[in-house]
Structure formats: C-alpha cells, structure tokens
Image (cartoon, rainbow, N blue to C red; front, side, top):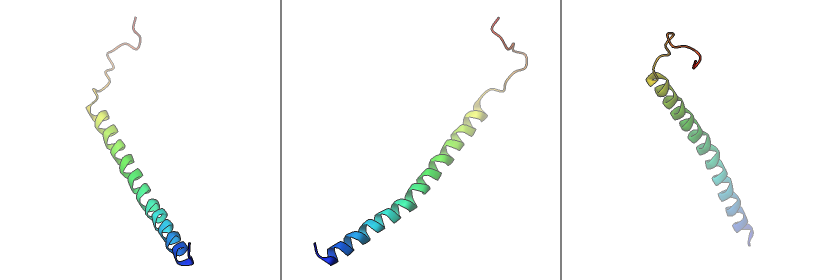
Amino acid sequence: MSYRDYVIGAYAVFALILLWDVLVPHLQIRAALRAARLRAARRHAAPAPSSELPLSRD
C-alpha cells in the first residue's frame, strides 16, 4: 500500500465517521419526537379517570 492509498483510506474513514456523527443524533431526535407524539396521542385518546369508580375490586 502506497502512502497515497493510506491517505485516501484515512480520509474516507474520517468522512464516514463524520457522516455517522451527523446522522445518528438526527435520527435519535426524530425517534424521540415521534415517541413523544405517540405518547401524547395515547394520553389524549385515553378515557378520563372517573372518581366514581372504587379503588379496589371488592
């Protein structure tokens, strides 16, 4: 392997790691926002707790 091939390979690895460092947080934020939206939709669709119901199953 010549010096030129080593430098090209090193820059390619650097570019891949840099791309990974940009994409992964973006995808994690998207997933967290989606989970928050789904949780809010479930909470909104759930029936309101009734104070008339007993707390035990007796």
